[in-house]
Image (cartoon, rainbow, N blue to C red; front, side, top):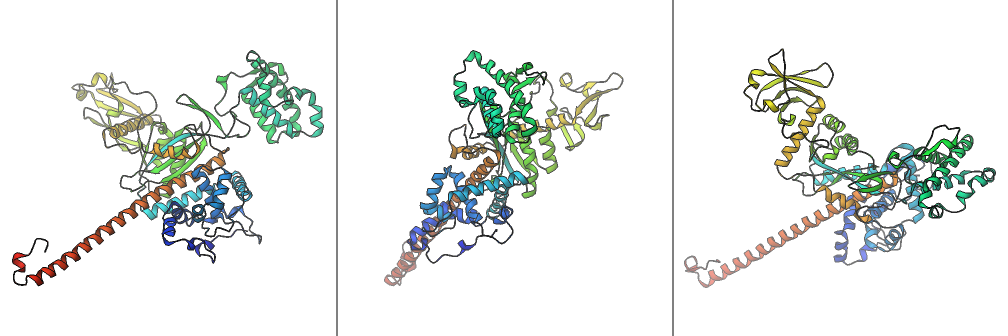
Length: 577
């Protein structure tokens, strides 16, 4: 039975914190723990997790705000479960952050945490809803409102993160999947196929591959594929719906080609270049994909982060976190993020790099009323010897341009072509005759009409506008996007080096982990901002107190001088009087 936890709002009879000295209490309250308690723990809406529990009279749940807070702290600090358990039991700051003020009380057991993670993962899988993402949005929106931050300008970036999986060779991967598939067999089937499987199950996959010579590698892989082809056909009537069977069928389809399904000898091994980036990387993580970036290979996921970047803000907060297989294009991540951001907060300008530029991104930005500010554009660059479409001035709505002005200041209307998305502009040939750019202009002369015609598509106009935005950004004030690189480093920092292999696997667990990291990044930024503001207040108070004390002493000296020199006070008084 679900029940909200509010007992932390009232101090208990055996409150340990109250036994601390006032100085220590103040230090604890102004530490990151006090900030976490007020900015995360107290703001957390527990009802977002109510569907995870039974709605009938039963034993009440462990406080959800504590369980979610535990996951956030574990993610933000990169703790293992053992380290987390030690902090929960012996770290006063961690207990204070979770609303626990008695050292002798138990928060929860590790088994409770494991069950909570499993229940959240199952809920995400069955419903497609992410309660951690909902909590992140709810808390972040409240923090943005409380701090009066401007969200109209934001920036976006992505980075690769590795899943906690082993790096398999092709032979070892296929053999590992086969060995796991044999575990689904009944005792009778295991006995029936014992002779066929015996060479492949007598040792683990690593030991088998260790004994394979380099020149016999393809031969072993082919023989293994032929065995799997027979087994898939024989096992299909009984085990077709079993996850292990489906995984085996997937690996077989990804690595082998069979000309005649009825003849296993027609099987061939696919060349490495034929393997898809979406092919299975490990039987422990069915969603992880492969991607090469800047000469490095990554097996796992891509995390996309959006944060505020208005120069008027005293601090910037992360507003959105997305996780997807790492073969997902950045443009698709932008398209998926814009509707939610546009619904939650005002957003006018989005600063991005060239990886996010594309037709879908442009359409999504137009629909949301957002201006894209890319640092570059993907694709071939225009010929510097020719007049580019970016040198023309395009007027009208983005999806329905009305007129165009050439670099020689001739303005003509744009008319729609016979095909949707195509436009035509007719420039007067007499005016173009005096133009020094006419030999390099994309507008071509017509034989039967005294005009030069420019034929363009909607996409060409969009690219021209993007190039103009890039040029304006390069020649204007410093771009607002580069600082997001530091944010991406902060996201990966708790988990090690640049390749960043996370301690979890599976897209749902990776999403939960990185959402917690983002919430801790926001919390630390708010905490540092509050420390700075508190220091300014203390300094201003000290300055005011010093001025007040000085003014009092000056007044006392004035009174003393007045008594000693009643007749000549105004004439002979010192300057300090």
